[in-house]
Length: 146
Image 1 (cartoon, rainbow, N blue to C red):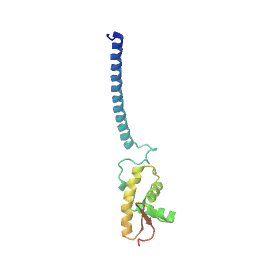
Image 2: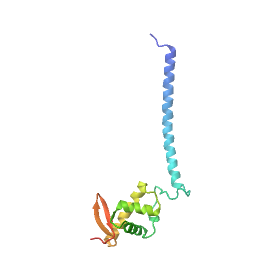
Image 3: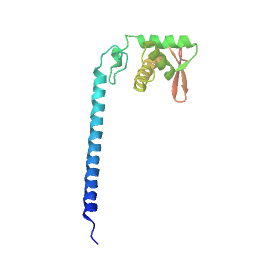
Image 4: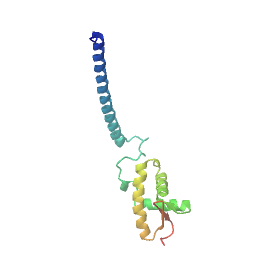
């Protein structure tokens, strides 16, 4: 028995609409990726007062701290705490002191890396104490290293 003409026509129309929807979804995905890229570039160049304190994706930390400022902030954090602190705690204290976003993981990572370099050099010079490691994180103290 032959398929009625209406069923054949509706089946072809359904296939045509499904193909069109699939193409529209592909185009929507491409448009969303494009929009995301444009928003990311705009965030890098946005200089409005409300976003000036936001840390840009590729900022150079050399220009964010005055000479010796990071070490002074570390010492202040250690003095305020009154006990040895680990690198993560000092990093958060520095970010708080500068008024930046503590939840920015990339900023914390960049500052922690620079902090370890800075404090390792200070520990070798005897200006700060290295109190060992705990759970893979260095502990720093105000006393000279032993």
